[in-house]
Amino acid sequence: MYSSAMPQLRRVWFFGRVCLVLLGIEACRVLVHRQHWEVLTPNPLFSALVASEVFLLGFLLNGVLTDYKEGEKLPGELAAALECIALEVKGLPLLQPDAEVKGSLALLAGFSGALLAWMQEAGPTLALLERLNELQLAIEQLGCLYPAPLQARLLLELAQIRRGVQRIDVIRSTTFVPSVYGMAYIGTGVLTIGLVFSRIEPFAESLFFIGVICFLLIKLLLLITDLDNPFGAAQALSVENVSLRPVADAVQRLQRVAEAG
Image 1 (cartoon, rainbow, N blue to C red):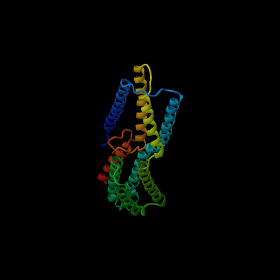
Image 2: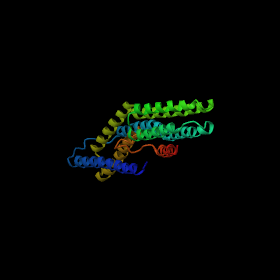
Image 3: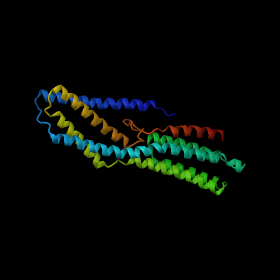
Image 4: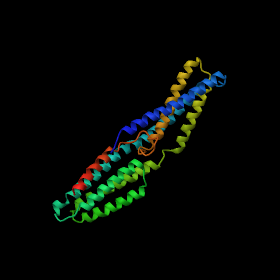
């Protein structure tokens, strides 16, 4: 059963982790001020460092959002393809009363459950593709009883499912421009260290502005890293993932269809 409670808890934990990091930075700032280790003086070059870091983060965010927006469409497309196949198979006895479709419907329901588990838990892709191959063979055997246009439609729906599985696997395994990620992490670290060791008066105001800047940069960087894999529900620290409810609802309907035969 698909539940939205876990993502909410993960968002709270994500916010808490960022706050813990921020408290550590503020504690270092207080220590630096008390020990008179403020060796840097803000200047226009410091503003350029902030601008360059914002540019890098904007570049990364724009890149990962492309895959995220595509990933939002995949669960709905997969669910629609599964249900279209189920309806076509279920309607075959109307054309061929002696056609046996229970086995194919059971295979389809079993594959849909395996697909949902794979999307939730990031299991081995090869095992899922083997089940898809088994399902395709069964559907093709039934397809001999269909008119040619219906056969083509079934094969197109199966091809769409295969493309969706492969695309999800690629999105999971590919990191958007790793070298830019490295630059963004280094830039955020250098900027944070520079803020901590800068001589900014009055001190109370410096704590506020350093806290706000570091909070925004760190949270945005961690969020971009999370958005890079919109199918990371199996990862304990992953927060923002696409909704799998369309597939979960389709699994329940297909199981009822398979049980009814």
